[in-house]
Image (tube, rainbow, N blue to C red):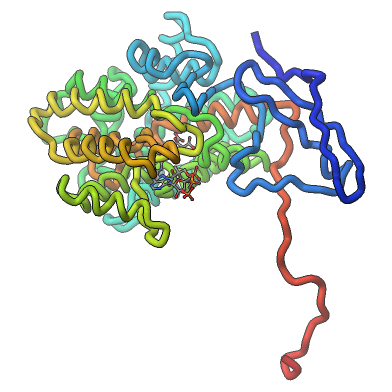
Length: 437
Ligand code: SDX
């Protein structure tokens, strides 16, 4: 059953006090969540733009993929609660769910897993592409470069108006992103690339490509593979966040899917977004000891200090990010599996969370730990270097970007995204010759 936005017959009246003119604006209902005021005709009818830098009150599209209730701390993928998926499903099944809208039958899941598996290898020519980067390049820079270059290799899946091309490009992107990511890691440590194996599931294959070497067998820990799979599920999609909106905006011009995903990776890299997981670990290492927490909490509250408590706060969640709870649970499992008795950074993170959640600055602003607060501690325990944390986020989020990109292309009302502005610059003036300036 595909829901569609319904014209609720409800309207909002906008009155211009300067002229006394009033305008009736339609209100649209979703299946759940806030109604929207449809302002598509506002400029044509009123000569006014709306103004919403950061899009704090703006819906950019219709979507049926992910729903977030920020006040209640609820996250649904196609209607299924994130904690139920994290505890009962696996990443391949969640990829199918995000792409097709329903949980797959056993047969559908087996075929989908096979089709993704048989796209995990890269065109061998791409492997030489890495040679152009310095060994100490940030792996996110390599991800932007290599993913952006995929359209130079896969010419047979670039017609975005051909559903078959879109499906092939989507499968290729989902399948190859772990291979590209693992190769960025191997390149940075001077080890040979490890090819994917078709007998491993998505998370196992990623660990295999990251940590195995030709010199000896690498035994994949089922606990780590399960933890990695759960982390991928938690990061898979998240409504119209900055990087997803970037993918949609790039795609709205008709750009090929590989270029759009590269744009999403670039946006995710920022420390206010996906780069926060790397920034959290750096922050915890900077704090160093519980005795220093108060000093950093003070810095985070100081308007004159650019320091923010990384991994805290969220544009939408004004309650606990449901993903951070599952992540914290995984923390303990991974640390136990790795035989890490007491990880001082986890102790420090939990104490920092406790103190922040008792501080009125954070309570008043409803700043809670988000998905990035604990993820870095798990990744570090898994032996993943800090510079790879956001790369893992990009690996997981690729299916969400692809699902949202497909939904945008298939949306009959979609058109090129082209916002306007409130102009504060110089008004028209004549050119002045150099000798008269
Ligand atoms: C992700 O959008 C998504 O869905 C993203 C994501 C996804 O899955 O795609 O969930 C992934 O990006 C999670 C967020 C990771 N980023 C961080 O952890 C960086 C630290 N957090 C902040 O920079 C901030 O909270 C944001 C960017 C996440 C949200 O910023 P908003 O919504 O623009 O909020 P804001 O900056 O307007 O803050 C409101 C108030 C301000 O104080 P006042 O001006 O009202 O006095 O809260 C303060 C801010 O100064 N504030 C913080 C803070 N976050 C907000 N103060 C200290 N530390 C913080 N972390």
